[in-house]
Image (cartoon, rainbow, N blue to C red; front, side, top):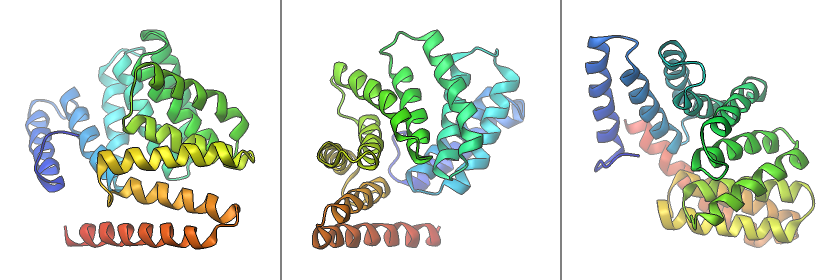
Length: 239
């Protein structure tokens, strides 16, 4: 999310850029871009509540400035819907994510990354709201797209993590474990062992281990996850 030497430097840079755009027009589309990038950085730290008003304002500007079927509007819908899902507001998230999928499928070919991202976000919502069987075709389609693109990035890790949870809920523990292991490996490789999203996958994998009678292994992962969360909480408190 930008090439900056630190999280704080990136936030300050986007805040400065946002102030410049706001002098031109408080509803300048550049303001929405800056708000979105600031929010994405907050999401990477797990601070979804702080990201929410930024995503909401960014989408408000895009709705005002862009045509109703503009593909960039779809990105704003997807971003806000994803944050609402993470906060547990599934009722508000679902129509946004459905609109995002419709816009992506209208403007891009079926294997475009934006189609994949929107499918994955909607699948994450369905999984989180215990509609795992509905989520599976969307997860499978998204994983297949990333596979055809030879992608081994964070988007694939997010999708695998969600599919792993859906598979676990459906009782397919071996397939679920394979997805969660792969998601963890990608996140550790791409983000480092102490990233917030690594803690999320560790906790999800630990849940699977407990359900399959491997409590000792689960405790080790849970301990790592707690240490990572404590580190991020401490860093946020010092800002």
